[in-house]
Each structure stands twice: as structure tokens, then as C-alpha cells.
Amino acid sequence: VTASPTKPPQSTPQPTPELVVSRENRCGQNELHARETCGNVCQSLTDCGPGEYCWGVHPNYCGSITKRVYVDPAQSTVWTRCGTSELDARSFCGEPCTWQCAEEGETCQSVHANYCDSEYYIE
Figure 1 (cartoon, one colour):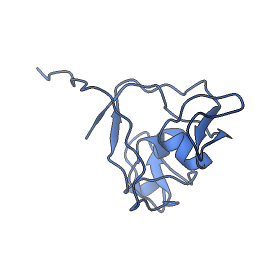
Figure 2 (cartoon, helix red, strand yellow):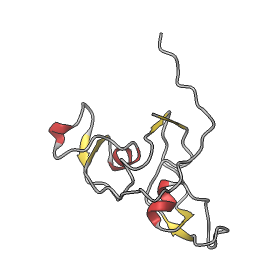
Figure 3 (spheres, rainbow, N blue to C red):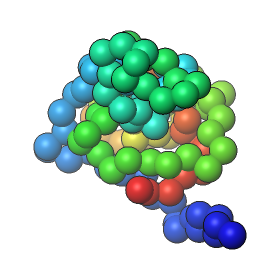
């Protein structure tokens, strides 16, 4: 019997000076899954597991932040979030916004599809 993963208090990884933007193709069921789960880097379908494809993904911080393992990922219905950039707003699940942001230096950004608000644990 395999125990279900326990979920520690969820805290979103925060930006650090060592962040490196990744644009490498990644394996996943779709682009969103490949990017949000930081799937294996790939050059072609043969580099991926069963049911996965090799996707060109939006810029991300895969390799720079702790890998998240999603329990039951669902695409977020929030399309604008606060951040210093679209990448930061999406990657660090900034506060939802409609126009202004409370944090100095952040602006309301339109974001690509993401798994913000989905439960996860850190691998």
C-alpha cells in the first residue's frame, strides 16, 4: 500500500537572484503540463515517456526553483496576476488583480495558463 502524499503548508517559492529563465523543450501531456511540472528536457518525442509529447514551452524557471508535484492539477481560471513580469506573476502565483497591485514594483500582468491554486508538494 502506497501512502498518499501529505501536503505540508503550501508556500509558493519566491524569486531569488539565481533564477535562470529556461526555454528548453519539455515532456508532458500538453504544453501546460510540460511547463508547470518541469517535465524532462527533450529534443523529440522519443525522449518522453508513454502518453507524453515533446513541447516547446513558454519561458519558465524550471531548474531554478524547487520542483512542484501537483496532486490533481487544474488550470487556473485567473488570467491576471501581480508581479514584476508575466513570468514572475505566473511562476510565483502573484495575487489576482484587475488593475492595480499592492506590492511596490509589481503591476497587473496578463498571464499564460498555469496551475496556480492547484495543490502541490515539493519534490
